[in-house]
Length: 216
Image (cartoon, rainbow, N blue to C red; front, side, top):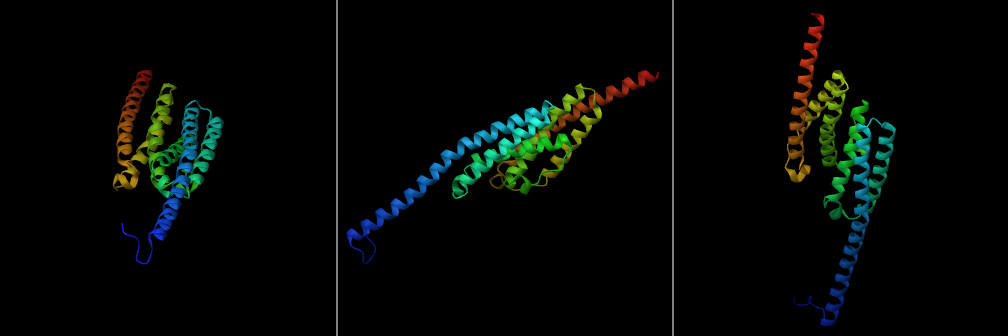
């Protein structure tokens, strides 16, 4: 490439060297932020998963504690990556946000608490939507636990939440590039919901038969 008009070879070389050095410095900063944010995102996912398991073990206080740990790690990662949007959109931050949202949703659903909104959780819209779908799928395990405990009414209530979430997410119709692959997550939720409906229906029928036999 010829040097810019009016610039001698030495001037062009100095300008080129300076420009490359500046770009290299920005890339170095972005890479350092990425390397620092990755462990924080792993902590988000680990704590969120542990929070969900604590919910299923009926340990709400422990679940809240772990969800708070997940949130703290998420805020660290978000802060590190805020100056570098290209790194933020690479995928691993989205996954961490989704896992944190899933934990908060699962806690809220099982506790009967209000629905956490995206601004409440401090996550992007696609992360919120996918976390919502995956939390609804998590309710299958809790519904089966309630069926085994003889609490059919509670299992039916959880199935109702799963239905509501699925129906709402079916209205989201954008390409995967916009939603982060939401369609596949919603398809998985549909399958989980139908299996849960079959289990709840079978138990309900058996319960009615037992009640009829007792009356006879």
